[in-house]
Image (cartoon, rainbow, N blue to C red; front, side, top):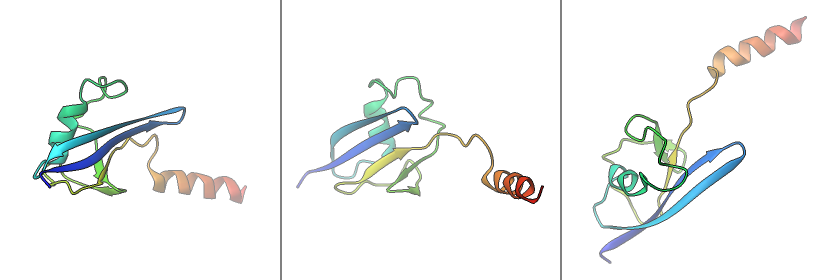
Amino acid sequence: MNTVEVEVVYALPERSWTVPLELPVGSTIGDALDRVRNEDGFATLPLDEISVGVWGERSARDRVLENHDRIEIYRPLMEDPVTARRRRAGADKR
């Protein structure tokens, strides 16, 4: 097999985008991101800066892809989870 089949996904609360790709064996996350750069839903994203991962695990852009990998583009957090937890805990005590 000379290719790997992967998909690149990005989700917002109201909508998600999925682009299936067939890439040469040895391709990286960075190669996949380059392929979706102009696709609907991805064109306005700062793909060179935003966090990415495979199956929920953050990964570097030079990670070599395996067949059926799911490349996920992560949105920035609106609030630090620790801060949010402390805020909620403080509200519960009142």
